[in-house]
Image 1 (cartoon, rainbow, N blue to C red):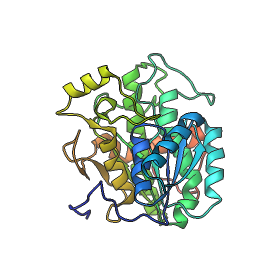
Image 2 (cartoon, rainbow, N blue to C red):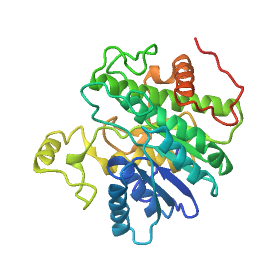
Image 3 (cartoon, one colour):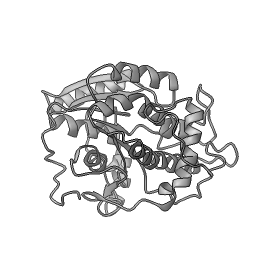
Length: 317
């Protein structure tokens, strides 16, 4: 069981440990990197925009001058970019953890496709991370590491459609977001089931940041610059909203707490705000049939079969 005395502002010493975070240039991803680096970890910061990534690295160094950082261009909506980045990382020493944070929070109003031909939101939030996880699995296994998938409390807002995961029919922006977060979480739990079944020493967990707003987040040059309007709106929601910095607490705890275990769901203690704590996931995300179906879809959509799991087939209805 995880301890109750966890202090997110004073993490255990992470010296000698290596972590990769997707979507590191802003928001929860940036603050996750800042917290990991502050605890002494070697952090691989990734994002699709090199200039924004460079500014984010400089912002971490401004607060943690001795931070051990490297940057890597990675666009999770582009499978070619995913494979290229993974090839750079996996040829090195073992990887202790990966935080699959990158994602589209404000989807386009009309359905858009990636260069690989997939719906943009689910490709960015779920499919790209599935392919990245498979490519990095040997490096994670070498260090007996863990992967953390960024879930959401929104997964019950719309019914999940297992037949049409990319919403060829009935696309709306919010429905696409919820669909992608159900898919992301389901993949996280299914990964844990399959890794356990194959005795692979890698844990897979899901975490969510609660209701984290830019308007509640401190200003950081080059990373966070909320407007007066955002500050005002954020203030109106102060009771149920928190900063992106605090939003990173649960994903970071899931990533580094030695007592955290595969298959767990972490989030703020008061659902939307609070200290990082174990939470109860929505039923659809943990349904083995939903997980197996999504796994099968992701495997074929990305043409990626995870090592160590080849030849193993769990039932898909």
